[in-house]
Length: 164
Picture (cartoon, rainbow, N blue to C red):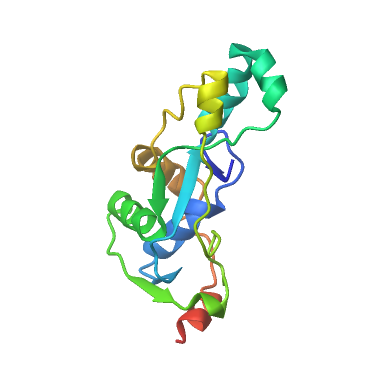
């Protein structure tokens, strides 16, 4: 899988990056053009794919490797908009030249996703059942419960990449 989130996941930094800035009224420095596609897959969907090898063990052994991810691709700017809606905050995105580097941006500078089609066709996996848009409601509540609203964060690298 590419980028995993979920209630049972131990990796929160990808989506937290957006909320960290939004709830503090900070600008979101996103690599230009902001239309890069990414797959954010719920850990429950990853688990269902892993269990799907039981649907056809011979096919699983024959193929050996399967991409694990969602069909639902989001653009970096779209993730920002969805997070702002859930948090009830203003959205201020500023795109920056990717040649300036990644700074603290949580994703790669280019499209980064996989296709789960092989797992669907060979293993009979039904595909991801969770949607980032729907999951962001509980995710934001979890963010607040984990102290996200009050944690101490430096935005120095953001300001540097934005030329402020």
